[in-house]
Length: 168
Image (cartoon, rainbow, N blue to C red; front, side, top):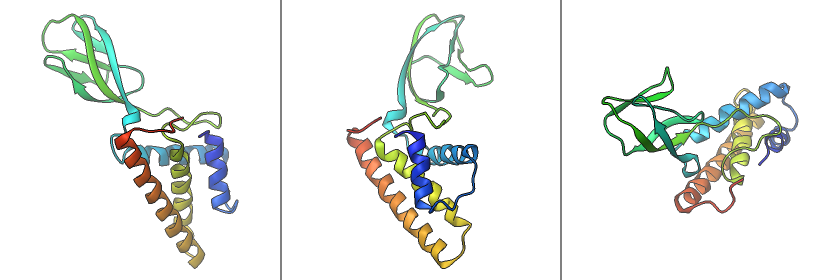
């Protein structure tokens, strides 16, 4: 789902009561996306890298977050240099599975994951918007958005276990 559509859903679900700027809405959307992505190791974030080993080092991919499977001899990750460094002299090809980091959102970007990810992001945005509204309506809307988000998260988790059929 395109980020602009996520923002528009959020605005509808808060009855256009949000006075956030576009930049603040994008920041909130990215924060909520990161929250969802942190819920589990989503299969759509898994990637395999096959990289040349040069001087017993491998440069990490730009979207690298963390390694999930390495079939390599003793090595460690030097995050300050964005490299995997081997404890012994080695050359050849290094292959490893890793979790990618989500990229920054813009109005034109597409939210990573299944189509329902965009709805889940918008629900979390609306839920947190109503956290500040302590009226009875605000509490009711918070609960409604939380329940809708949990349902979407459960559906995405099941889909992720068996493979997505609607990844954008």
